[in-house]
Length: 305
Length: 315
Image (cartoon, rainbow over the protein chains, first blue to last red):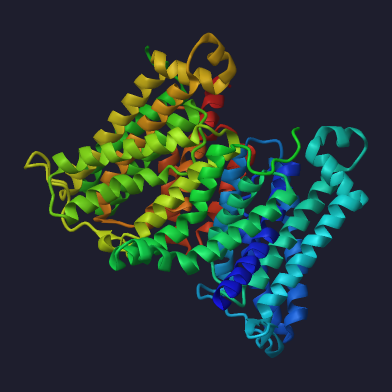
């Protein structure tokens, strides 16, 4: 029972992390109609920046904040230098160009930080387990991830739904030309949104960093998961991304934790132990395929253009 | 249909001649490396050409095309591991399994359009990737070594470098000829018509998705052949060959060379893999140059290299 609670929380934490990544992706996709494969690279850069700045300042929080700022600036610079020439182009062109950026970032990281991964140690106050309900302990750091991600999600909701900038973002998502014609500086808006997305990806990367190692290519696997989420959730919909991210996070984690035991009850021991890891890794993709076959527009499609 | 004499066709013809004469050059200069490099390039050119059939002519942006490389490769590898070494069995099985795989994926994926199609093909390729990673009997994550290349009963020796090269080249030319015939047939025209305007084709009375699906299966089968060649070339097959970045590589080759032109993917494969190889000799960090080059090509050279050549011949 405790194991189920723990794994549910792990799933929630992973899902919220995925949401941070997917939110940026779906914003950029929904508003600028831009497929950004390099989003995973920004996630990786966030983690590398954090590892560097934390070692440099000696403080986890300060280092994380600096890393967040650095990823934001990197995102804005990237948009300004390269990506703004690709708006309005074919999705395929964007895939090719941002695929090139992945190659670039992977080798740039290898040049600057070397091929070996980095570790991002946690401060002592975050390593202690917390008793969440009597008898159940849960790592404080993972709780902090949940809290931060929820706060960011709420903030994002407020910004998008309750502020003028958010209104422009939503207007841009439904009709780009029209808000340009109404005298809104759409280029600036795009740059801002891209920077915001980059910062969210960086935040996800730097929060994930202490749990996994910081390494080259860390963004590639999780990028695909983020794409799965925005596709399941319906492209351009932040609410859809949130629901789908939690859904995917919980299913993935629970699948990995409990599928082997479940399979062992049905199949023979040897067959189960070979099938289980493969099956639990592909569970998410299976889910996406089923959802797309049944509902080709995703579960929560954004309003029609 | 007689091909016209212009810059792009001349380049394609010269390229074919160079590919045919390459083993001679290699034998004269004793440069074996170039032959092994180009064997790999020719195999990838075949895979890219098959992707071009659905992407360029059919408008189906598959982001999971490398899956067939793996399916074809694993068919050969698994049969070899089980003691069936005859190419007369291995290769037809590789083609049949790839075709079946493409049929299932295509039938489900073609219900979606646009970005959703890109993502669902990707999802299926990732599933194939994880399935093969879980095949612990056949090496799992670490991949499967193919100890003996396919045996064609003395007809052709795949372990001989130039014979194997010519086999790959024959497959490439055969594949290109097939694609050329398909594209110019009634079937191919319907597929291209569906790409330009699906509703209109439906209204004239064509069952658009059926045509699409057949095209998808043909492309998957050709790529399965490339997979069988690749497994023989590297004597090894691993899940990594199906990873999504490999599908991305194939897409890059097609777009770089010029989507929707017969020789575009061949040129794309040659340029991309040569560039990768040359850069890796100059610097350890080839991506630092290759990445921005791709970006610049997208921004400044629309329609890829073939598009550039086409503009040159008009100018």
